[in-house]
Amino acid sequence: MSHKVLVLNATYEPLNVCSARRAIVLMLKRKAEAVEMSGRSFHSADRTFIIPNVIKLAYYVRVPRGGSRKVSRRAVLARDRHRCQYCGSHAHLTIDHIIPRSRGGASTWDNIVTSCATCNTRKGDRLLAEANMTLTVNPRPPEPHAFIYLSVTEVHRSWKQYLQYAVA
Image (cartoon, rainbow, N blue to C red; front, side, top):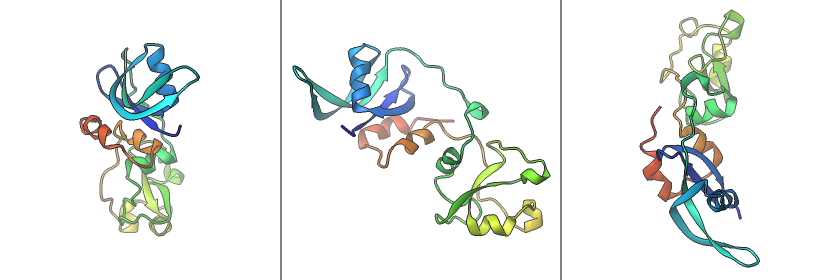
């Protein structure tokens, strides 16, 4: 049962992705309700469960915003849509500190970007102006739904209406 299910907050804000098994358990415990059904089913010894595509929690979960989300390589790559923020390449991606750590730069959302290995090597431990480089977009904390894209290889079409309203 590798089916993935979108989890919405009580306010219909996308929170996460879980397995179909976990979604069914949440629904059985009345902690969540199905919003969109898949048409697929899961069979136990004595019952059949229709697998949802989207569930909504029965209670509100407070979500940390902005800089309080943990900075990680995976999260930076997801925020930047797996594209070098200097040249736009999708190949050989790393992360780069805009103000290098050797010069006091912190590992914060506004100081880390996705960079291809070529651009990262070219920039080295210099500032952008010193390396004669510019960013395509100024970095910021990721949008809430960026973490949903980390969990799946394909976004189901029934999820799109909930993801389009997600804002940072």
